[in-house]
Length: 204
Image 1 (cartoon, rainbow, N blue to C red):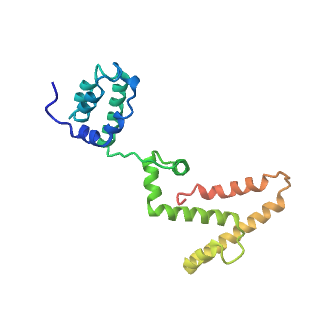
Image 2 (tube, one colour):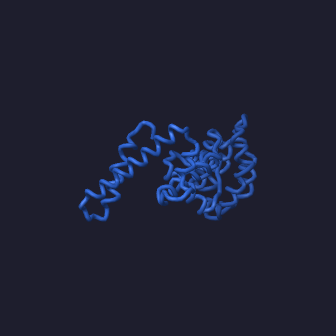
Image 3 (tube, one colour):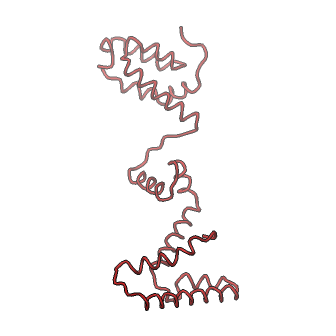
């Protein structure tokens, strides 16, 4: 006996995706070689619940195919209930999203997409590129970030920063004079040890 109460989610699935699913049913999926294929297809495409559709298919179409329909519908229903959508994207786009997900420690692809599409993300990428330039370029030259920073500081803060730069330079000079090591990694290790004292600050 057919269901009397329509399932709106099933009807939405039926009207948008069920026809495509039915088109994947091959001759070998029919138990009797497709003898009742047209009748079953019409009944399924006019069903108002999944149960109705399964009832029409049973005994005519293989249980494997029926189970596949159940799986497809459960997935569709889950996406609907969670307001999730399926997107078809290029492999390169997927790689970009997953790379950003890993780089920024996003928990889910949803979170990654949200941040990637957020206007602030572009600003964050610009800041990251600026930090790389500051780290790799000599402090000499008026295009270095330190000069634009100094212009935004008060006179007292500017003086304090300049004194700190001077102190850091003098410490580095003394360290270099006193060091006897020939290790290739000595400079990097010494720099890391020196800067770590600031990284432990609550302001960073």
